[in-house]
Image 1 (cartoon, one colour):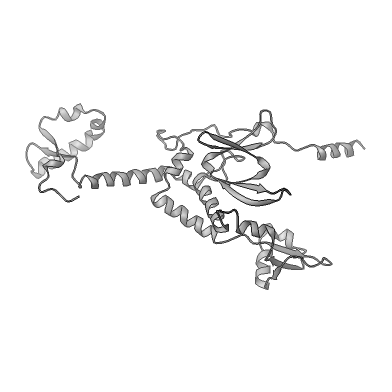
Image 2 (cartoon, helix red, strand yellow):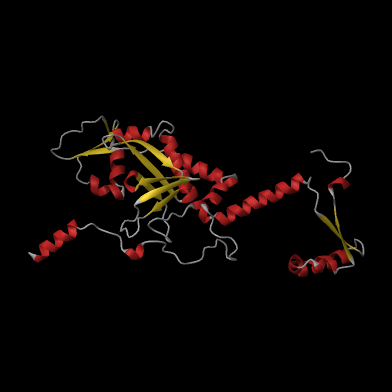
Length: 310
């Protein structure tokens, strides 16, 4: 009798998350590069890199994922009545493909018939999420936010019967999961902050999508853009450098010439000396001034003649 009461109490008692798992589960470095000069990017910094190759790859991935809309299936077992909604029978190959999927094998094991649902409120909701976005837009934006931030949020707007009738995607860069003080829940509400405007959405009205993140497996999300952020920033800086050079009509900033002339031996000696001392020169400008035998001349734009067309 005692064991029965203990089992009943454990079943009735609300399951809670161990307090040791609350908060950030990573105590390592907050830097991106090995030299510890670039810190983890903020949400706005990730959004700023949506250009060039990064945006091309993200948009292609999101567009491809959005071309596969969700499908709904219904199973009928022995002695069960037929579904009341409109359905389409599946072929043998489609049925075998569904039954071969590991996450569906247990659900379809005892099913005598598997059919695709053609008309259902859930399908209608996903195909027309809200007055602005259709089903393709919803899936594409969701995947874009996952690619950029590793997280995505759907707000379910409910009618008077507490049934969702609209899905609104919340811009991830403005959303933060929150917990009440001394709460045993992982998330109590989602805070949406846009400038000075703040709105809180109940946790039960928001669907939280996220990529796996070993540093924070409960509230974190490690996006592909964040994982390759160092390379993306390097590409942006490289493009900006080339653009600056082209805007300067490809004119070099300075010309360095040995005082001895352009003899081959003098040029080779100059290259070797510059290679050995370049690191020191970058730190100390006096290195250049101490080389009296060499001259460095800046080239102003007005010195170019004839002027190049802009």
